[in-house]
Length: 361
Length: 272
Ligand code: SF4
Ligand code: SF4
Ligand code: FES
Image (tube, rainbow over all chains, first blue to last red; front, side, top):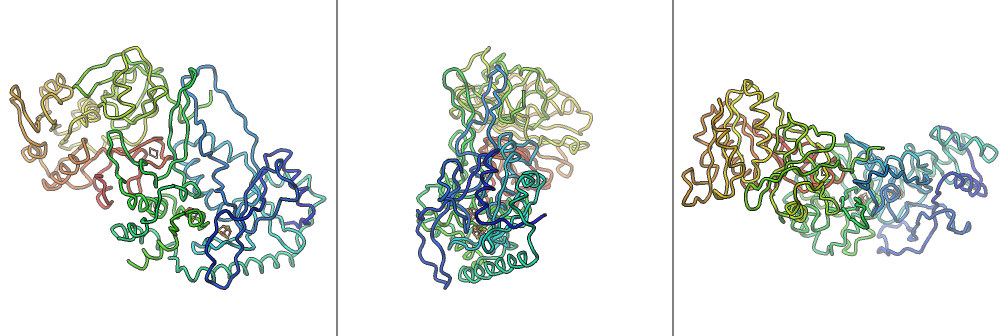
C-alpha cells in the first residue's frame, strides 16, 4: 500500500478524474431526518446525516467529507431494492444491459465489513449472482476514516475500527489541510498515475499524525460505548442460542410496528424474494429485498408459517446474524453501524437486546 | 448466451396423471434433458405466475423425462393444476444434496412416507431398485389420510411384488372398499421386518408426521445419524442466497433438503 498527501483543494480534481470513468457518488450533508435522544455520556456527538449522491447531480460546494457512515446501506449500490433478475423464455438473445460502474466515496469501515458479508452471499456458494458480481467487480471503493461517530455507532464493540485498513481501492484520512490517500489496489494505482502531480508521498510525521487521530477516535468511542455494555463478539453466538427461550424477545418486540425498516436499512441483511411478473408478452423475474421481520417471510404454500409471531421473527434475525453467520462465515453479520437503531420507530435497540441476553444467561 | 442463475429452462408438459382429487403427476420433457440425483429438488416456474420447489418423483436414471407429483395447495400449484399437456413450464436446478446412496450399502432401508411425501420417495425407490443388490432389503411404510388420497395406486402393488421389497400401506380413516390397514403410519413401524440395529429410516411427509415418525424410529433403536428427513421450508432462490430456508446453521436448499436427524436434533422448533 502506498500513501500520499492530497491537498484539500485538490480533492475535487480527484473526484472529477474519477467521474470520467465511473458513476461517482460523493457525500453530502443533510439535517438529520432521524433525531436521537442526546447521548448521556460527555461526548458531544454530531447529529447531521450524510447521503451519497451522484457527483454529476450535486453542487460542488455541497460536497463534504463525511465524518461517519452515510444514512443508507452500502449494499443498495450492489443489489437494488427491486430489480429485474432475468427475463425468461426470451429467445431473442440475452439483452446485455451495460451499466456504468460506480465509484463510491465516503465508505466507512463498517460498510466494508458489511460488503464482506454481502460478497459471501452473492459471490459465494456454488454460483454467483451475476448482477451483483458484475457491479462489485467493476466498482471502485474510496473508503475513508471516521474522525467522529454517531450516537448509534458501535463498531468498536465488535472490534471493527472506525478507520479502514483493507478491502478498499483508495482510502482517505483527513489530516491538516488535506488528506492522506492510501492506494491499495492495482486498479487504484492505474488511476493514480494520471494524478501524479496532485500527490506527494506521505511523510512519516503525517502517518503518525493519522495514527494519533485514529487512536483518539477509538478512545472516544470506547468511552461512549461503556454505558451500553455490549457483549464481546466471541459471546454472540452463545448468547443468542442460550437465550432462545428467553422472554426478552417478547419484551423487546412490544413496540415493533413491523415496518421492516431495520432490515432494509441494515447493511449486512441480504434476504430477497424472486417474484414473477408478466406484461405484454414477456415474462420477468424480479429480485426484491425481503426480510425476516416481515410476516410472510417463512410462509409456505398451504399457509403454514414457522415464524408466525413477531417475537419469533426478531429472534430469527438475531439467530441469522449471530448463529448462522458465525457458523458459516466465521463472524457475525452485524458491523455495528447502528442504522437499525436510528431508524426504528419503536426504539428497539440491538445494543440493549444483546446486553440483556448476555446478562440473562 | 450468458448463464443466469435465476433463469429457468423450458419443459413441455407431456402427460398429466391424476393421482387423487388434489394431487397430479406432471410428466415433463425438459428441453435438452435434465439430470438430478435422487432427493435433490428443482424450482418449477409457471410462466408469469412464479416458482415453487418440488422434488422429482421420477427415476433419476432417465434424463429425458421428469415427473413431479404436486398437490394443489397454493397460488403456483393452483395455476399448475389448471395447465394441460402441451403447455410449457420452467425448471431450475437441480439443487441441494440428495440421498447419500453410498451410505445405504449393506443396510435394511425403512422408508416411511406420508401423503404426497411419497413423491420424492418414489424417485428414491427407483434408484434403490436399480441397485437392489447393495441393500439387505427395502421396506416401505406409507400412510395416507384415506384410501382415495393414496398416490401411485397402480405402482405400489407392483413394488410389493419385487424381490427384497416389502410394502405396507395404512390409512387414517378407511372406507367400505378398504381392506388394508387402518391407523397412523407410526403404528405399523414396530412390526416392520427389519433388523433395527442395522436399519436406516428415511422419512418424508407433513412436518407433524415426520416428527412422530422420527420419535418412533428413535424409540425402535435407530440412531439419529441413520434417520434421513426431507425438510419442507419456505424457499425462493434454491441457491443459498435468498435466506428463506434457514434451519439453524443450515440452508434447506443447499445443505438439504435431506438432513439426518443428527444434524437437526439440537436445533429449536425444527418441525414448525
Ligand atoms: S459504525 Fe464505526 S465505522 Fe461505521 S460510521 Fe460509525 S464510527 Fe464509522
Ligand atoms: S443489525 Fe443494525 S447495527 Fe448491525 S449491521 Fe444491521 S443495521 Fe447495522
Ligand atoms: S431457498 Fe434461497 S437460501 Fe434457500
